[in-house]
Every structure is written in C-alpha cells, then in structure tokens.
Amino acid sequence: MKILTVSDVVDASLYPGFDADRFAGVDLVLACGDLQPEYLSFLVNALRVPLYYVRGNHDIRYETKPPLGAGSVHSKLVQFKGVKIMGFEGSHWYNGGPNQYTEWQMRFIVYRMLPTIWRRGGVDIFMAHAPPRFVHDAEDPCHRGFQVFRWLIRRCRPQYFIHGHIHNRFNDDSERITLIESTRVVNTYGFFQIEIDDRPFAGQA
Picture 1: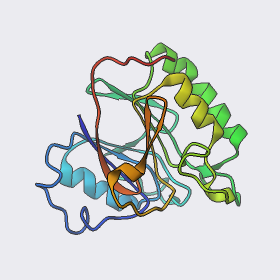
Picture 2: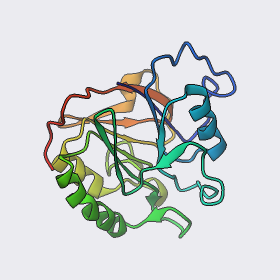
Picture 3: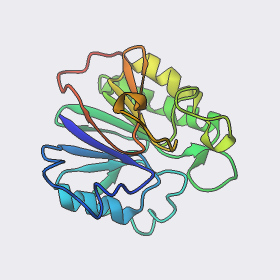
Picture 4: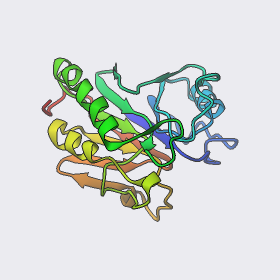
C-alpha cells in the first residue's frame, strides 16, 4: 500500500502545482498536523482517497471548519485495507494554547488506548504531530518529544511511527527516518511517501 504523508507546510509539489502522475497509485493520505483544513480538503478532492489526520499545536480552526472528507484519528484506531492506524494530536505543553499536552496527560491518553490496541491485535502505523523524545526532537519546551511514544513503539512494534512538528530540510529521504528496533520513525515535514506491507500484523500489544 502506498501512503502519502504530509505535515506543517504546504508543498508546491502538491498545491498549487499538483501533478497527478507523480502521485499516481497513492491509496491513503495521513496528515500529521499544522496544515490548513482547506489544504487537506484539496488533497482529498485531488487524490480521491481517504485522508486521516491529527491536529497540530497551530490547528485552531478545525473545530469550526474541519477538512471536508477527512477524519480525525486522535485517540482512535481505524483500519484501512487491513492496515491499522492510531493517532495522537498536539505538541508538548509550552504556553497553554490549544492541542498542547504535558507528558503525564499524553501518557494518560496512550494508556487509555492500550485495551483497544490489545483487542484489535496491534497497530501498524502510529501517527502523531510530535515526535518521540530524543528522536528528531529539540530541547525547547515546544519541540520536545514525548517519552511515552518511545515506550509505545517498543511495546507495540508498529511498522511506522510518523510525525511532523520538527521543521527540517532533508538532503535525501534517508535523513527523515530513524529506526527504533524494527520501527521506522519518519519525520514527514512537507510530504513523504511510504509503502507498507498489509499482511497480518506481527507485532505485540
């Protein structure tokens, strides 16, 4: 399965210069936050595929103007063509704005989802706005990752953990990806395409 992942900035390759041939064969879009709802609505319309999203710390209009045709996966587990996906919105708390969580608040959200993960037989892709702690993150309060995400990766062993929030420019695609055991942690700043094996899940909950 081919998945287009997006976050943080509108890339000219997707809007306004959308090239249908370049993105042919995309089955699903995953949006990791800090993007205008109109942009997500455009991607749904242009690609004609489902789109799931989590909100970032700057996504303050989604309550009144949600992206058309897209669905939030914050604290939810959805399945698409056999691939199980779960999302966690927001950044680390830094000034009390919307979609910000302390480590303990995010830990509570993650722990609350464990029974669902267990009942559904694991997760293939975790998607979040913020990264795991000490993987692609920074030391300022806003861009610090969540420790609980590292724990979640090691416990559940998903194929991918994708995130946004950290604004980097990459010389090649390999610079986006860090392995934690068998899990590929991907910074999807701008956009990135991944392919995932949709065979039955082999991790543990």
